[in-house]
Image (tube, rainbow, N blue to C red; front, side, top):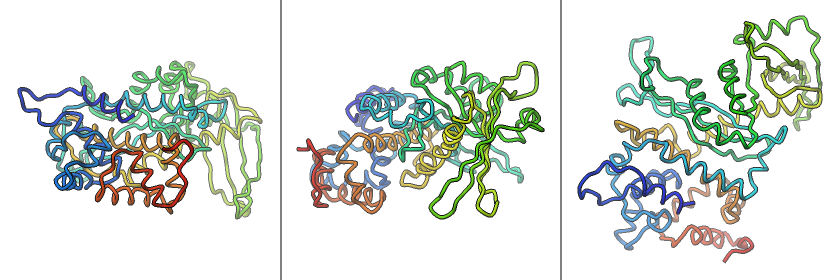
Length: 426
């Protein structure tokens, strides 16, 4: 994958003219990627020092960087590059996961993959801004500049990993006076990328923002299923139709390990999602979780195109609730688990902020790929106290030692822990 990645980076558009090409475009992009992959903001600084003393560095042997550019060179070279240049890597990794037979483990209700959509903000400033920034006016009259992105992610209630897909950035659109928004960006993603994923049998998950007729119709046209949160306050017509009806109900008792909770499911098929003769008919279900004293500890409802029956309602709700993984396992992981998504690694004047975020999301995807298919990578975290320990060790080792390859590095770590190498290891 590093080879495929590097080959793609070698073809990045280069704004430079003449002989001013000491650093290759691939060197700039791989150098930036190495910071996110190792979760070490100082990685390049360490490697420059090692190169001076040892004549080579881990940036070269592990990431294939010929010459490490300065931070300013990296920002300057990458600023004109649009994130879409990286999208083939997302598709290649998903293809690899499928070829390795690991995508099947993510399939759930109706043998579907669950694709959760959610928007997240990754930059905010009162002073720094670029033409790609969105803006919000505060009550004080002050203008805040920010960047945000819609992050489609394959999730499963039975898997700890998530698989990030091609992102869609929320940016001002040419010829449009209105600010871009999450819902519009999601529609744009469907039009641009939907055909690449619809053949995989996908159910799209999303919060209440997405359960509107135009987006639901677009999902069906793109051959996607959907399970979307739908709240009473934003769907008055649907909830008017529910009034006074004896709804089919399923009650299940679930032991949490501490208390016995009661899960009450209600459902009804064929409800209009909005007012009007042209309203799309959807199927509705609701889950209410109560504690032994009758206190409601969870309540949510969903709209879906999947037919709901007594036999399917529990699985459909479980799939719908899995939407939270796009927030916890993807967006919050990117913000709080070493990827530092909200840190300003460089804003630039064109696309730098969004391009660096794309590399950051890609680093999570590479880690997911390794976690799913690489025996040595799987072995190490299972014998270390936390995931953070693994990256602390990785940072320490690459700061003082030079490794010939990733295989060399992982084998060194395994032998250092006195573990048996996985089968078929050299």
